[in-house]
Length: 434
Figure 1 (cartoon, rainbow, N blue to C red):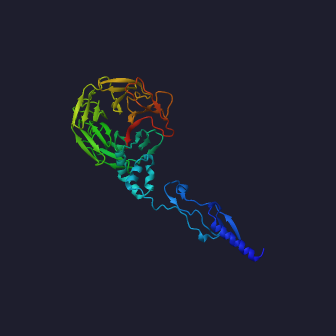
Figure 2: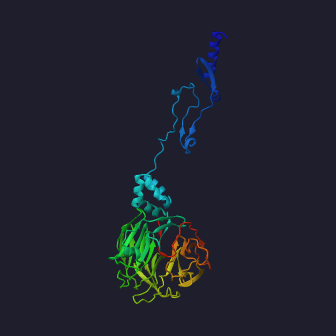
Figure 3: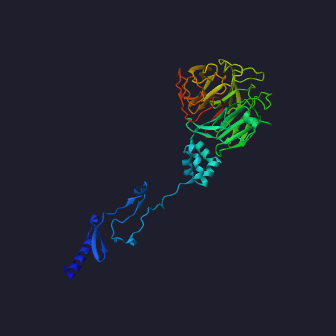
């Protein structure tokens, strides 16, 4: 082909390329050592951010077609997605999201940033959980053979060892009472110089001493209601005087407030919160005689109401533990320690109804060493097994059930705890809801 014809053919190809309106047929001219050839290029279209990172709403504008020279990277511009118009989350919205994360994941929060760490350590995150109604139960247990307290999740599938309690040896080996108020685990016991209170703070994962009760006591009744806790009765640090005083603990201010005195002095009694009242049940008076009456403190009226013969049908033996009681769905349940039988209190008739035998041996130590607690909408019981099957090792079993006051018998469900073994004697057990 003559040189003139070659130039004319080349010119025709360039014109055809410029006039081609079909994107799928757009051609790119490439030159290599003086030779020219054509490359068909597929149409380029706009792609959204969801094509790149799974999020929608933004488009990265790419030209539908353009001419480039193969091998010439100088003409290619970067096509990174533009995130500049995505507004950051406000601190308030971020707090709402964090408050809904399970508490079992909170140990990771200090690794996020300083603001989140400060939010967790200050306790504000737990206040947000309380405001929006997000609650999660944890079970704190101190058993024989253990030097530290353990925190279990609701299903006992995981456990966490608490820091060592920095009390003296007298406190460590003596009798103790425990209760929960908000994010505080309160432990009361005797040190060398008298009765003291230690508190474990969930926010900081640490123990702090105090505040002391207005009337330091042991062997008292206690109950939790939301972020608050109540105590009543018991004996003084010397064990000489039986008390009828009562107090309320506020974890936000870390203070105890005095309540009106009960009608009866009592020790080795039990407490619960039901019908917006703090109940104190059973126990022994200053003469050592068993009390079958109960008392209820009404916060609205700021006064106590005496309930005669509340435990009239319950047999009491020497050296028996305080009554094993728990409230679920605003109904009062009791575990009778001589027969291992569960009962429910019928408020209208003020009588107890039998609901069958519980699958633990509460009678083996007259009620001592057994945990009987409310766990949300379930009853929790931990004790020596009544069968040959042990689900927690060392003869200890853990059972839960959803109680029904109208049922004749309840269905108890065993919890398999794997490696989370428990001792065969529970010294203290408290449930925290936060």
